[in-house]
Image 1 (cartoon, one colour):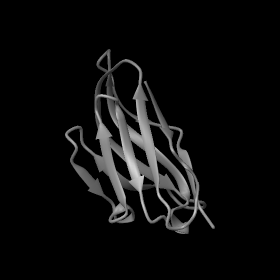
Image 2 (cartoon, rainbow, N blue to C red):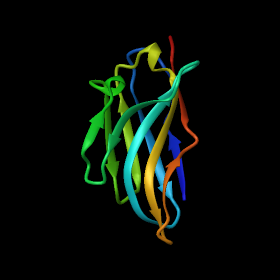
Image 3 (cartoon, one colour):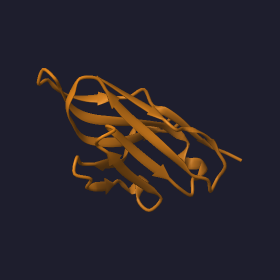
Image 4 (cartoon, rainbow, N blue to C red):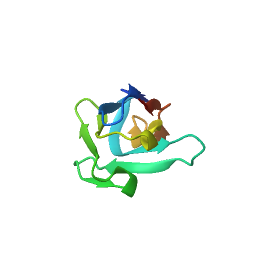
Length: 119
């Protein structure tokens, strides 16, 4: 089982990005998934989570400008980030509750995707 994030990059203030988190491997259940971020010199923080049914919740850091969504058929969770600010600069990670083909359940992390907001 593997989670791979993509979609990060360098963007000017006010810009937008769509981050993707794709799960692969022998997966029976791709469950609750969250996006986290860790800025320079900061602790990792929760941005948003989404259930298998699509119910989303946001931490204060993600309210208003971020939208989490998922495509279960593609086993992919997205994070749309708008009106980006320099303080959004961070490495963005996804974390998913996954049950594999053997019935083993675990919380998996991806390697992250870097977002830099700068003019």
